[in-house]
Each structure stands twice: as structure tokens, then as C-alpha cells.
Image (cartoon, rainbow over all chains, first blue to last red; front, top):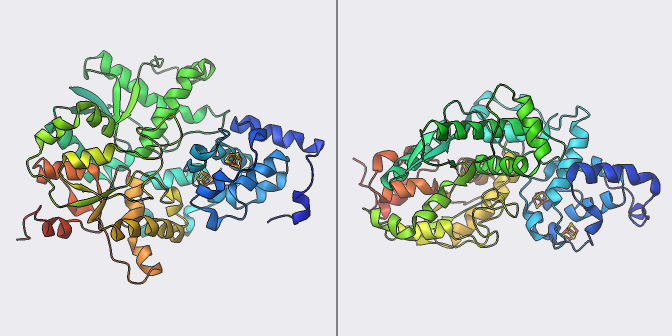
Length: 139
Length: 299
Ligand code: SF4
Ligand code: SF4
């Protein structure tokens, strides 16, 4: 997705306040504490698969940019909490990722489906894998 | 000592070797793990969204079972023991939320009106914590077949340690599995990625990504000379073990490395070979154990 770089330089627009407030409420995190140090991104095991670094996701939310919902990153995040233990400002980035996923999932969006899997493969998977996968990635 | 025990779904299927070896080894140390009656799936992940109440019902219902067990004298304590790292984390966090948030607790009680109201008196622990509390010397005393010469790399993954405040040990440098392995007579192999994620539930749709992450962990263990990796989570075990089939496709020349549950090594060291369940592991750890003289040659 990645909007044009020029948009990143924009200041917070008052009309974006409601999106920002919604994410803050759902996640319980104080987004404005982030000072973009990048520690969350440096420890994240999945950045190679992401289009936005975790710290960028937080920056988008600070700006109230709803376009962040189109990011692949929120679905790639594995909720490993590595970022959470690294953040010097005490932000639980995984909670923010969850809030963003929830905003999509609550619109009846399914990121994945088990239909593509061979029955053989499905049988071999531990239940905790299947259940957590569906909890995180389907409505 | 009789403690309530919450198995969770996976311990009854792909991780039967984890359960069997854990129950036998705990018993050998005088800890009777009594399975919760009528337990249900915990939901596997903690509900992170602040307005979520629905996903607290499953974990809390299990904690109600624990209070009932204690009341009817089936167990001596209300410390519920878990084995699966995901169950541990989910039960522990749900418990913490409803204990702190009275409004949520009230809602949970109202929705489950046909259950006894949860009293909030349960403590959620992992077996590794119970062992640590027993004292390592007690574990060492029980060893019949020291795991001499066996080089084991402990791998913790995520949910036994994070987020802050919910782990069983130090988030940066946990030591509980290391101490256990030493008590069993094994040699500990340190790997930098012992707390790095294996890719977790992405194993369902993104197995190549999981294979990449697992490869980094396994490769560190192999390069450091480990005979095997020890873990405490059935999802880590799957991603590091059976998923090596995918690792092989991506990394030419990759040599398989066995991955076992810490309880299997305990059972082996305690002389409870029939409860080790190594035949369920993939790759098979038995050749490596035979090479160290810890299992008899195949007949
Ligand atoms: S919780 Fe998500 S964003 Fe944070 S380190 Fe893990 S994968 Fe990356
Ligand atoms: S670690 Fe915390 S403060 Fe630093 S960029 Fe990430 S969210 Fe912001």
C-alpha cells in the first residue's frame, strides 16, 4: 500500500482525531508517548514480510491516518510481544496491532481461510495453531 | 501434593508425549497433577482489545472448575498448573484482567449465570515454576540416569516470557530451563534466539515464513553443537520440529535437529522410559540419545 512519501510529512489533521481516538480506546495504549526511536522495529522478527515497520504503524496512528488499515503489517505481526518488552515508553505495540486488526475484522473481513488447505495438512496441525490463527485473522 | 492441572486441547493430540512425560515426572517428584473435570479450550490467545468480554468466558470458566475442585477437596491448592505456553498465557492474563477490573468480572459472572461465580482465588502457573519452587536439588536427587554428555539448547519462545509482568522468568535471559537441564545432568547450549518468535500461528498459511524463522533458531543450535532443542510449547515444537520438512526445501544441506519437550528429558533422566513418548517426535530424537548412550540400541 504505502501512500506517497510526501504524506508522511503531514501534520496531524484534526479530522483524523476520531480514528486515532478509536485505536487508543481499543488498544488501551497512549499512542502519543511514542518518540519514534525504532526499538520495536529493530527487534521485530517479521519485518522482512512487512510493508510498514511496526514503528511506522505507530506513527500512522499518531497522525490518525486510517490508511494504516490497508497495511500488510497488521496481519503479519505474530503477537510475539518482542516490541512490547523493548519499547522505552511502555507502549504495547502488539495491542495497537490488535486494535487495527479488530477494526477490520469487525467489518466482517476475513484475512485467511482454511479452505485452501489439504485435509491431510489440516489434520497434522496442532489445534492451538488453527484456533489462534482463526482468532487473529478471521471475523 | 495434589495440584489442579489444565491440559488444553493440543496436549490430548499432537502433544500427548508432553502430557504423558509431564504427569509421570511430576508424580516421581511427589506432585500429583489432577486434571480439571469438564475443562474447555481456553481460546489459545489472550483477548487484547480492551472492550472484549466474550473471550474471557472460556478461560474463566476453567478457573471456576479449579475453585470447585479445591472446595470439594480434590486438590490441595488453587494453583492451576499448565504445560502449554499458550494456555498458560491465556489463563494467566484473563485471570489478571478480571481480578483487576471489577466491571469485567461482574459481566463475566452475569453472562455465565449458571456457573458458580468466579471468586478470583486461583493462581495460574506453569510446570517449570512448580519445579523451580521445589528446588533443583530435589530434582537432581531423583535422577537415575543422568543425561551425561547430552547437549541441549533451551528454547522459550514468546508466551512463557512476555508481555512484561506475565512471564515465568526474566524476559531477556530466562534461566529456569537451563537450571532444570543442569539438574538432569545435561549440558546447556546457549543460543541468542532462545526467546525469539518461531512464527506461531502463521504456520497455517505462511509456512515458508515459519520455516525461515525456525531455521535461524535451529541453525544457531546446530552451530553451537546442540544434540537437540528443548521447548515448553506445542506450537513451538511443531514449528521447530515437523516444519523442518519446509526448512529442508528452503535451505539445501540443512541437517535435521530433534526438538523435544523438557518433560521428556526429565522422564528419561528419572528412568521413566515408558513415559518419554519419543516415538511421537519428528525428527526422531532417539538416534541422538542412543549416540550418547542414553537409550538402549534398537533391538
Ligand atoms: S508483536 Fe508484532 S510487531 Fe511486535 S515484534 Fe512481534 S511481530 Fe513484530
Ligand atoms: S519502541 Fe516505542 S517509542 Fe520506540 S518507536 Fe516503537 S513504539 Fe515508538
